[in-house]
Image 1 (tube, protein in one colour):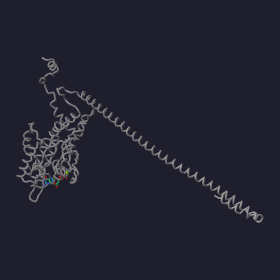
Image 2 (spheres, protein in one colour):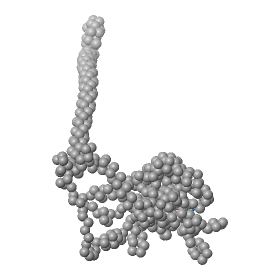
Image 3 (cartoon, rainbow, N blue to C red):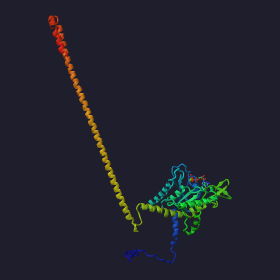
Image 4 (cartoon, helix red, strand yellow):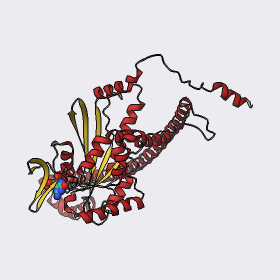
Length: 442
Ligand code: GTP
Ligand code: MG
């Protein structure tokens, strides 16, 4: 035997042996303990209602739980589909139920319905993500965690009698790997018996041919296998909702009253309401919760963890340790961080360089401007200086002329005062004065 085989045999767990006991020990009460614990803890159940505005979603919820939930009528003018969850605390006998009804408000009201399914898918994923985050916490408190994961999606089909709309097929296809879908034909009192039969066959055919996986009531538990198998054949359920009570015979029953007769909600000859209630609440509620956890959530969790780089084994089927994966991821993350840091640093350096260049260019421009202004200023100064000098020269020339004129005037005055005495002399010199005048006055 090879060494590896020997090691495997040595590490193998011993086969458990059956033993009989001498008397009653008491662990047969384990199921009761489980029931008691669950009852104390209470249950949560979350229903998603998808169907066009006014199709009868709220009425059916009220009819199913025999109460009146506070719901307001949805507007027909929503820009996109909006998910509106409402949680209620219900009690029956000693069992507490935290029921959340999520309404896909505005579904089917938009002109472009291509993305109508997306808010619904996102909402379902968000609830899975919340649960996963709680699970991944070091200090988990799943015991009292309010589980908001959607356990069932009641898909309301419009009773056209023809076929499914493409919106129905696309939406159900997008949802089928995320939630248990139970299709129901709403307002089934508006469609005749023979049309309804054909409509059901048509719908199932279309679902199969488009590969839409709807929820199948489980047939592996013997206690419910038979009834579930029968009910699977009745899908999609054709339901009528009403909270109005009408007197039929001497009994008050929930029904819809018309001029031509009464449609009784809980009469199996009139509609499949009882079948739906039986399957959804009384027989398979726990299976729906279980399927949500073990199938849909498990798929989400696996994809999410794989996305994060976790694997159970490598290519050679060697189990991966969490520690190794964590270390590898940590290294990857740190090197990515370093790369980003380096990138940022480089970007910063480039930015600083660019700004520095811009500043230098600005400085050069300013300097040139300054030099130009300086030159202009000097030129102006020189011109002014020249003007001043010219002016000074003109002033001194004027002063000189003024002094000469004054001197001449003084001489002329003196000469006038001596005139009688020197009349003859002057006559002789008259020609000489005129020559002096013509010479000195500029
Ligand atoms: P929004 O919340 O506004 O989208 O509407 P909804 O889908 O909750 O419909 P709602 O229950 O408010 O019902 C709309 C109308 O349809 C009401 O007038 C109901 O009385 C009527 N209705 C509800 N169920 C049925 C049904 O099974 N058959 C018929 N014929 N009418 C119904
Ligand atoms: Mg409503």
